[in-house]
Amino acid sequence: MPITSSRTLLPGDGVTLTADLWRPESHTERGSVVLLHGGGQTRHSWQRTGIRLAEHGWRTYAVDARGHGDSDWASDGDYSTEAYARDLVSIVGVIGEAPVLVGASMGGTAALIAEADHPGLSRALVLVDVVPKAEPEGLAKITGFLERGLAGFDTLDDALAAVVAYNPHRRRPPRADGLRKNLRERDGRWYWHWDPQLLSDRKKTLATATTREIRARAAARTITVPTLLIRGAQSDIVSPDGARELLELIPGSRHVDVSGAGHMVSGDDNDVLSEGLLEFLSEIQPRS
Image 1: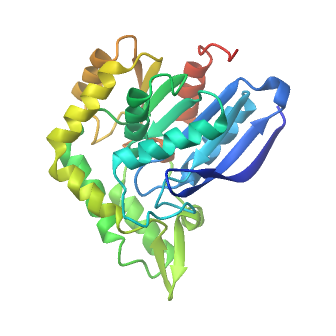
Image 2 (image 1 turned 90 degrees about the vertical axis):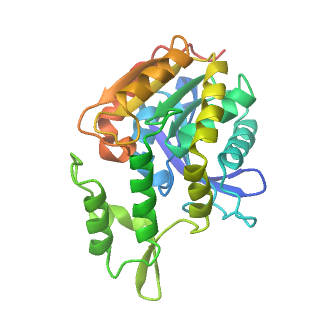
């Protein structure tokens, strides 16, 4: 199916967000999908998924969250879940229809909160390796990885080595050239393309894990749209017990495990994730 791709700007809550947009032929569109990446990632982690969805008739937006990639950094340093959720509500308002929200980790939590606070914001919800009860050891591991990157890297190969050390069991090893989109060269060093201030909110979240879990559980109990949990089978963030709890909190929800993938499922095995996502979307009623 012929598709077109473009870069577009979307208004968030006081910030301008950058997105990639893939569109099928207009008469074949089934509706919209918004892809939301995890903390420290960018919209480029969704590249293959965005193309696949458009090939199957979905107008697909992959959005750089505030403080990430080519989107604005928050002048007030607000990188809370609530801020990401407000941005999402603004994005949906511009899209002009209820989309399917697909969120990985940080993006999934924002989608969950936004749908709970604004019922009917989405047609369906796909949570990629995110549940109310996250495993603290896995969260601390991610934060450590992000912190170690603050000083930058001498070369792209050094950045690649850091990624491999964080996730040595990844089935499809990353390439240095593939990381280039997520890094920026400055003064002879390579830095991850996100605002270092976002780590402040992340540390607050870790320190108030109980509050975060209570908020997420309360949100999950209100969800009535079709919901799918996609979990990395080797995830150190979402345990089998955490997955079962989410399914109990959202009646009628379902989940699939992606074998060979860890927490960053959208990067670890993008193709397998896309297959599970497309199967779920095939059951979503066409827009009226």
